[in-house]
Length: 346
Image (tube, rainbow, N blue to C red; front, top):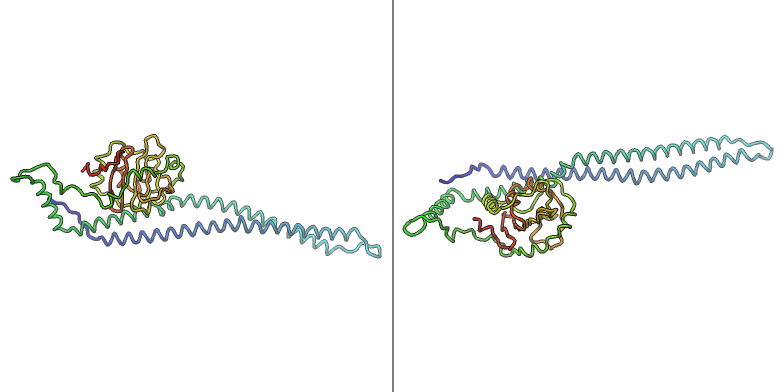
């Protein structure tokens, strides 16, 4: 008996994915504009305004000094008649100079006060939007990628059609009834063994291991907050079961760190290497086709599990396991001897 899934409309998923992509673009633009406005205002207050009013204070102090000197000259020296000349104008000039200087000092103090206020508010704002920003930069792209993989799988499923499903059922029945005289057999025909994935022969597991950065370098990487987004395709349910059969250890604790190459979100072929148990890094993820000079960030196992729940069984593989994925999902699992053990679990 064959079972089937009811798929009413892939177009609805595509439409939602398109809206989600537009949302990510709009949200990223809004966050960028807000951060740019804050930065521009900070530079205006800390640089332009503080420098301007500091220079105004110096200039007005010089003006006041000249006015006071002129007033002093009027009060010291007498005219040709022996009388003391009027100093009314000089007194007014001194008063005006003092007022202008006081105004400049008030403006300078106000600029310093508002600079501190802006820095405090900017810190509160950035802390408030940090979670949303991380979701926009990592969580939403991961959801978009997952929807794309779902659409691809559904299109393949629909393309198979009822005839294809029946044909697969007949082939499975023939395989189960195989053997001379129609006698059943548990042996699996060679033609039913999964063929190696395209590009598997090009993979050099020893070369990948050789160019993984040192544990010290990976441990010193900057933290990456939020769900981890990877450019490779989703691991199928069949391959998840195969990975579970090969798993011999518990997955690292959710708080443990993993190292993720900065290009992992866009690279189509990725490797996952389980590091030694005593290492500060539990898993390292990077591009198969990288040049060996990758930049890395650190994330938690929990962040990877949120962004890519399909990798949960792979995380339980033993130390030294090397996993390779591409845009179609899981390609190979290499043991410490660099033998591909994925097919042996089937």
